[in-house]
Image (cartoon, rainbow, N blue to C red; front, side, top):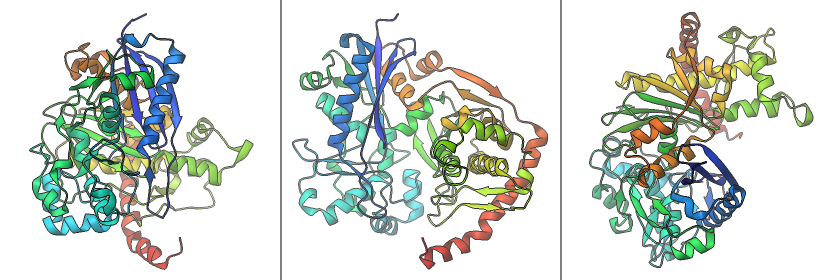
Length: 506
């Protein structure tokens, strides 16, 4: 057994995860602490960073007890987490109220103000991201307008993982990739863009100094070591946010590598050599954790959650609730194309590529011949159609995948993996990893602590893959026909979605 270990921590929306890996990248043990979410009004979503810290303390102590490891054997800690969910601190490093987390939508007026001042196209070309209320700079503006007594004391704005790093080390810094989620970072310059901050009325002085993710921020402080049961000899990485480290944990390392992560929502992430811009602003582009590389990001709101909704609401409840394996086994008896049944997976509006909060889910083409398995397969195919839709855009922009890796809960289904493979018409591999963000964080810790010389080497040593799949040409041809119907279905209902929203029936 190895005597050198790495700790990963993930500040998730639903809970805090802590995990230990040995220097051979083998998962040793983990712990999870659930986190509360406050939604006082429609469109609002807040969490208390102080609760994050208490969750980190609890999860860390749990994993140390379970593993029975000597804390001195933990070489490094790498923290990842949700973004953009800004943490507001005063000059003493104390938290100024709750964080308006990534799903909070109250800042649409602030977003529109900056977009109008700079121009939506100019803002996209500077940052690689379309103007959206989710990004951090607009949440600072909201604080200034609606909580002036707090904004007067505001001295630092950090991402969740940066706040935990501050509590671990007493030092303040961030990385390029997660800072891009503020929508104030120049994609090409990798510097805070003064013009954006001036338009927002936000002082640049409150933004942290930026480093590569493998930069050592410092060692665990005496106070933090006492609280968490850690050693003061353990170093802490600057690290990065969950989106980029999840891609790293899927083996995305070189230009052409693409990760398709099917969880509650889903992401299609492609690694590219230079920034990619879409004049229709359907995809975003971030600096990657590997210096000199970038990633395109296209996220969808409802993916795995659509299958859960179907199971829980329409296919039985309580003791009669079928398992996911039972659902997909039944769906495997249905032919590709579901005998003409289509599903539009926009159950909670949609991000890429349509960016329409009014969009809704639709089952179309229903006939008396369609059975429960048809509806299950239609959901699986609908999510795959969304993946294909997003990947088609990145391919059209020149980001042709050399390797496609599937991960997340949806990738555990052999049927769903094959549907996605047939839909995109490219060979795929499955990442053999229980949590790609935690593994990506462990890779960062391995490089920062000197176990490996680069993220490329760490990825080669620590990444493992399982099943490969190849597309069936006949099925792919069928899905191309279905894809055209899928696009037509959305376009034919845009006006209906708008009318439905205006009717105020939901």
